[in-house]
Image 1: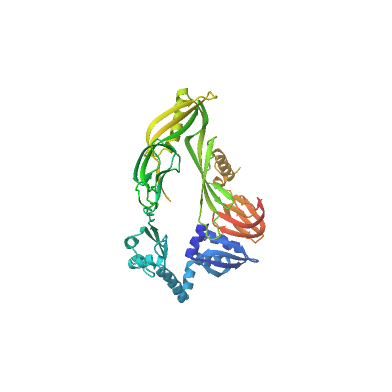
Image 2: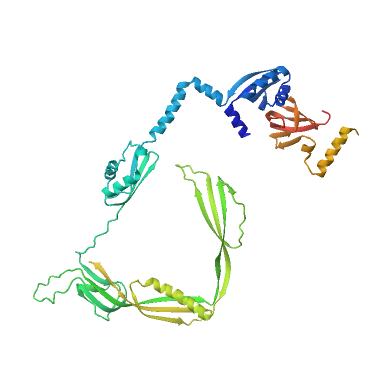
Length: 398
Length: 96
């Protein structure tokens, strides 16, 4: 029916008023002649309002004559009549055309330019460079070459590491990312070298300053290793004015790390089987429509829900929402390990923990693994002790 | 039993044996009622009377009368009539 109505609108239709002794006969004969009638309404005795396509009106005249009915056209609808009406009002039609063309014409220019992300440079500076590259208000969008503008801005403003020029309707957004300035090292400041870890000092190499600790000394975090205020005692005769320097040096020390891991001989738990199922739900208002109507095929599962919501406009939230539910199947498992396997597993865990603490440049000198005897027979506990040699010095200004 | 009745009887049998719907083989009307708002009558033979409170339709099975209020014929083609309004009753009158 919607298609029929649409076609009728395209080719035009009329509402006619049929009057006669028996309008039913009129309808029947019209049907017999292949005329399609719709929306027949009775208005009083032997008077009908009928909708009929424009092309059938000629046939209806014959039908009316044969059935002794008369009809008048009440209303003309559809494109052909609309066209006639527009033809009569030429200036209005022209206005519509001018409006549409004007809208199209005006939307082909750049009217707004927005600069985002700039901190160091002012927006005016960026806009100035952009104007030289051909991006200014009132410029044709077609003539805009974002790639070239990006390049020019980047060349002219060296502190910008990335520029993105995007056209959004009549607005151009210039996105900038500025280089983060690396803070200059406070070289001229005075500094000590302090310990960052507990350990036993193995070697001290002083580049600047004066060593305060000696080899085989145990140091704690925060302790000064190389002082930035060398004592003036050595250079005798000079004034006792303290001399401040920026202490520098490498202090190697032995550092110990601990790691602990345990493993049960019998393990119970849940794990993924790798099988998944997804369910799509379209939520309209409060109603939830399942798109692929299948149940959850798993007995044990983990659910993951993602929602896709249309962007809201002001306080209006679109009532349509797409919910995607993903199910991951879980299964119970129980594994029995031999004592040796459990030991290995615990060792791996312990080692992983140790490894996290050790810096990359540290050299491992010694490594000890010990099993801790526990009361629980089904539990294996492993402790790993690692000794490393590493630089524990840290420059700290004062 | 005259020839016409024989033919009808035969058709009925055929439709039963082949499980074909009666409205096609026997050319009988088929009425579909949607609540009290819409009625479709297929296989009609023309309108006998139409007012806002009553629509009488001629069919091969007799005269079909639709009673109601604010009735209007939504669409009418050779095969089907669609009646809209507040339908109160549909009566099939064999003698008609």
